[in-house]
Length: 221
Length: 270
Image (cartoon, rainbow over all chains, first blue to last red):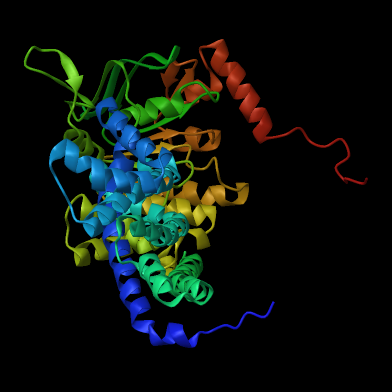
């Protein structure tokens, strides 16, 4: 085994990684935003007593959870335009596709978090004269959110890694940039090593911050 | 003649196929303290929760201050479920205290007490805080204003919950077994607060297993069994001269437990 590592070449192309990381961060940002905006109502609808709200929410959630994210992205980019005439750029397709994918998982996190709050909290809030919305906003969600943070961070970290699927639609995120670089330099081992480190550098601070937050809440409550 | 605050007529409620309330009638007048006693599973708590519609009754009617609770007549004269806003408005006029306290764990004691006044009644913060401090002083928690619920004893939590309910200036207070989750030595401090409320003329409906409290504080006692009101009357009638065998049997059982027979060997040498 006498492989000679050449990390110098990676350093020379460092801006490629920076560019890819920015794109990865952008897709993650939009996907998370879409995931949160659609995930909360989906989660609330799924625990509704009204079938007309519950059934469509359950269908959408399970559809996205039971099919591969790669298939979803390919479908949105290639099949949706054929069906609807709506052609989105590859970056937008990936952001929206991963956003809906995340929404399905976020919805389940919201639902489980809200369900974990005891019925007595609802009783106390409603007996005070609060409406459903007031009780949800003031009493239930603030407590539920604290329990949602660990699963949410899990989902968020996995979402960052899922952005690599964008390479299948030629989106210039980290993996796609790295693959291009490999085609130019023939140094796959160095480049994938740095790629792994780049993802770790993106994800680790988030995991660390969530642990700090959990600790602070545990102390104060 | 004092005005009737809460009246129930033929109230019925089923959970699936099981009927838990089988037609209950009751009138509670302003300033009255009513204790509801009876074996567990008799429907006492369910009946109490129907009064502010936390539990939906499905037959008969309950009126609070002459307003139907939870239902309204539609244009055809048929009874339909009332709007959530109307139900909330009625609930805001009744206070409720729960067996498991149900303080909001993410808020300090003070924030628990001012939450209803600020969010539901939209009162000014300074006004709500001033009243809350007075109430917390009254229930003996003036040193715990900034504490979080989980740092308090059960008795302290329940007194804070009473202050929270009183902060809405309720016209009726509903107590759902307020001392059943407490360690025995903490029961007294909660009952003391309730006693002082009663002597101030608060209208109170108390589901309880504390027979001494029912006997000493209640104006009337209602005995429930199997979803029915077995009998209702002044405590001295119920406790010393019950007119139903079921009441007598129940009282014998709980009073025996409260005062166990003396030990054969009082020195307790093992």
